[in-house]
Length: 196
Ligand SMILES: Nc1ncnc2c1ncn2[C@@H]1O[C@H](COP(=O)(O)OP(=O)(O)OP(=O)(O)O)[C@@H](O)[C@H]1O
Ligand SMILES: [Mg+2]
Image (cartoon, rainbow, N blue to C red; front, side, top):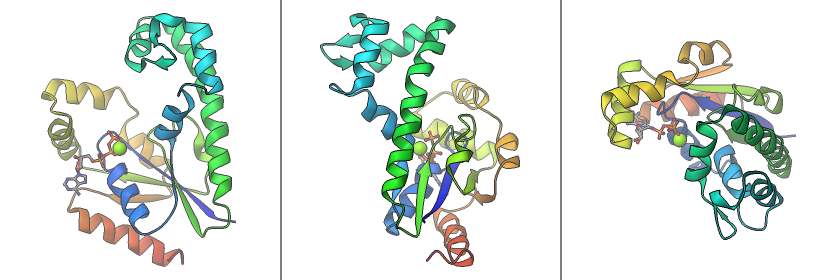
């Protein structure tokens, strides 16, 4: 059985930076965001379900317009609940299926921004949280997404706090220094866990 590592952290903490390092090292990575995007592609059962529930106004042909759907559910909490009721079981099932595919590997990583919010702890053996100094988090978010300070702060505060996530971590990777220093921490964990 593969060791399943759940990788998470707040926005712009460095999850993608860490998960691409795992990929570079040759470990399989299941990306929850990619799973969600794949499920709504034309021809997928979830795509049909969304069309029958939310109507063709949020579609272009059989292609879901994610932005329009986002706007629709943003202004209507009941619709958001409905969307979650459709998406979340499908995402969870597909994640489980993909993780199972890698069961003969030593390690498989589940990269999920909302790992803790969605209760995916149950799907993984260990939770790794990428942490970052709050002032650097704002800076990196502003730089990457070209956001003004106010909006960057809003996005950060719309999520669970880092403190809350860190309390649920088995492993903490501090990404406040260089990428090399972060990779060094990951390598050290792999060595200590005899996963390399
Ligand atoms: N150690 C580092 N030093 C400098 N810049 C970094 C470092 N780690 C990540 N970055 C940069 O900070 C930004 C955020 O990192 P990254 O995209 O990996 O975060 P994330 O947690 O995946 O974000 P999101 O929650 O939006 O998916 C990126 O522009 C990335 O290149
Ligand atoms: Mg990312």
